[in-house]
Image 1: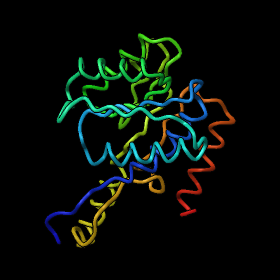
Image 2: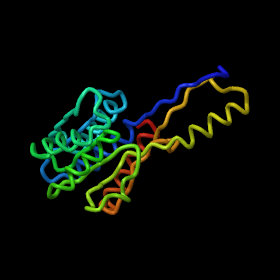
Image 3: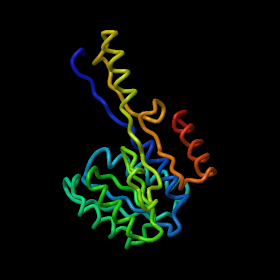
Image 4: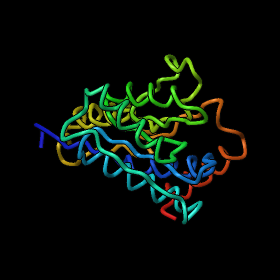
Length: 197
């Protein structure tokens, strides 16, 4: 107390919504997951994504590939591994990789009929080919506001903080590639997750 507090993510909640989106988007029935490393957040998001996709289509195929032990900045590896997942039939790729995600995006741009779901930020400003379907966004704004409020009240460090759908720390980016009907379905599922249903 008064010194430090833990901050975590319920990033699997946003990834579940991304999985629903991907299953509603795929034409091949095969989805790809590309991760840069064996990372706790990536594993939570991969699990949420699979659960969301299989809630729509229990038979959907999933192709999971990892760039390396710590391929966070491996742009070339991101491109190479994503190309392999696409070659194996994936037409929606969920990529988690920090700098390597730029290689993932390049691989998707070079393929016909494939779209990309990113994480953490919004890459629409560099999406020249119109392949960015969505992103599981992380926002620490509310967490910092809560921590600052706790400092002011003298209670900082008595509890941890978590980014989730309910507090807006986790959300799904809506792009022009998502139709109204699909987005309404996703919004309904989001409310079910928040309600614990």
